[in-house]
Length: 279
Image (cartoon, rainbow, N blue to C red; front, side, top):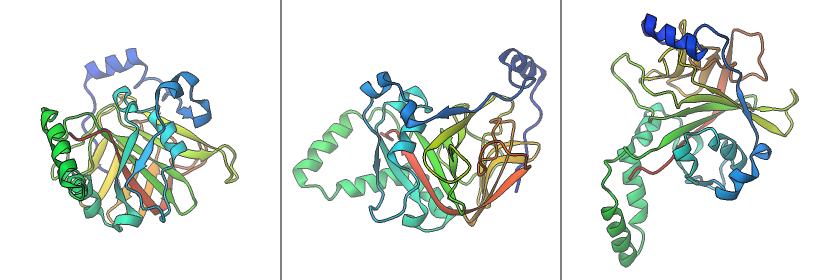
């Protein structure tokens, strides 16, 4: 279930980590957020998040409140985006890791969006294509965008991660992603499963660079000593969460900071959302 970790950081990195208070100090506390705690200043200038692409009749993990909480933790340039696009939903697209990877490919996403636009009238298409053409100076996928992964397990726990790059099957045993990535969980304010919920986010610590690793057998986010902050098997049915130094996280599918070494879970639903435009 675990991935290989990279070689230990160099001495220079360790020295920098000491100055930054990461490697040789306790993990920073999780950032806790709730929609009710958003400042009036922030609400004044940001429109509510619109979730695009979900079938109205299906059960969904992401909702406006959770999206609003997560939005405040995204890179500032992405907080301005008020439209989140569904890339993959287990209920909508089926239970398949290959489908998840295919739908996450920016080229496939663009083709899907262009296919939807083809249903517009001729005049509308001409105008929209002219607008796209005049503003397409930036290569596909190079515009700022990222992905929010949301999971719901068999106990109703909701958790996931934010990734600055799309998930894909990598042939090389090499991690990808940067320090913008983080893990998160939405837990009940009390142990009894009752509203309201609060969001806990576990930001990148800088202790190591083991951020994202994915292949045809599993997806792993965060790793230290062979333990992954979030690990999902190729069937998209089972997963496990460990505490790991990459994000200084709690076990994601537990309430609070328990004393278990890890937490296993069964995946009941999973969604991947893109924040930001491709072109």
